[in-house]
Image (tube, rainbow, N blue to C red; front, top):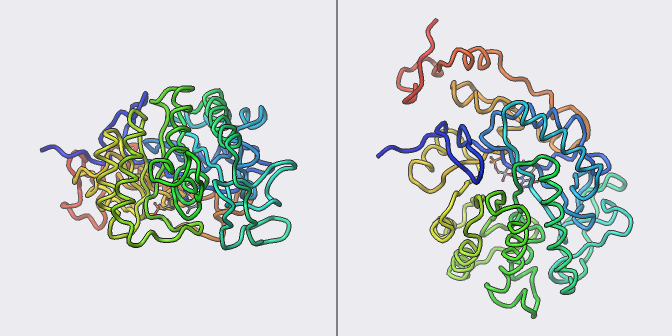
Length: 388
Ligand SMILES: Cc1cc2nc3c(=O)[nH]c(=O)nc-3n(C[C@H](O)[C@H](O)[C@H](O)COP(=O)(O)O)c2cc1C
C-alpha cells in the first residue's frame, strides 16, 4: 500500500496543498490595538511554504479580546490589515486560514476595549491569572453567564468575522473549539452548568459549537471552514474528566458527526489514556480531513500519516524559529530552537528575525536532499541525494 508522505499533495476544501505540513495557530501578541500590521504580514509571508498556515487566534468581536495585543476581525481597519497579510502569503505561493478565537472567560477587563463584556456559558470563574500590559498578571474575574440572546449574538459575531475573513482574502476560517476558550467552555461540564438547550447533556453542550459551525458554513461555504478540538484538554482551568472516558468519547464522536462536510477537523493530542480512542472516534464519525497536532517531529508525523490516523500534521513551535521549516524537513537540516521569552512580546525580536539557513535554501533550489551525517538510509523515497 502506498502511504502518504509529509510531502505528498492533498486537497483540503477548495485548496490544493503541496504538502501535509500545517503551521499551527499561535498567538504572538504583536497586534497593537488589535489591528494586524506590516510586521505580522512579514512573519506570515516568511512561513508561506507551509502546506497551510492557520493564523494566531483572532477575536471575532470586542468581547473575544481577552488577551493583550491579540488581533480582531470585526472592524474595517482590521480587515484592511489582514488583507496585507493574505496578499503577502498568497504572493509567496502560500495558503492561509484565519483562526477565530473567542476567549470567553479567559480574559481580563484591562485587555478589553470600552464597553466589551467577559461572557461565558455559566458564571464559573477560571482560576489563574491573565497578563495585562497595564498591571502585569491579574486574577481573571467571574464571567457573566450568557443569556440566550448573548448566545445568538456570539454566533452572529463568528458569522460576520468569517465574512470579513473572506473579504480580507483568507482562504477560509478555523473555529477555535480547543484549549479552554469559549466553544470548549460550552463543551465541558465544569464551565457549562446551563440548564437550557445549551447545557445538561453531551448533545446539548455540543450545540453551541455545531450551531456556530453550521452558521459560518452557511455564510462562507462548508469547504472553507475547519474546527479545532482538544478532547481531554485541561489547559485554561478545565478539570480532567477522570472516570468519564466513555462519555467524552461519545460526546466527541457525536460532535464530529455534527461537523461532517466541513473542510477539516484539527485535533490537539494529549497524553490522556483515552485520547487515542477519542481521536479515532472523531476521525471515523467526521469522515473528512483530519489534522493532528501536538509535539510532533518529522518522524512521528510520518508515522501518524502512515498509520492512517491523520491526513496532515500541524507544527507550532518549530515554525516560530524556523521560517523555512518545510525546507529544513525536506533536506534534513537541523532545527533552530525558539526563545519562549519572546513568544508574546511586542516588536520584531523573536518574531521576524529567525533566519532561514542558506544551506537549506541552496539545496532546496537544487531540488536535492543531503541526509544528516550523510547516511544513505536517511534519503527518503522520492528524494534525490545531493552530491559534493
Ligand atoms: C506561542 C504559542 C501560542 C499559541 N497560540 C495558540 C492559538 O492562538 N490558538 C491555538 O489554537 N493554539 C495555540 N497554541 C497551541 C499550538 O497551536 C499547538 O497546539 C502547540 O504549540 C503544540 O504544538 P507543537 O508541539 O507543534 O508546538 C499556541 C502555542 C504557542 C507555543
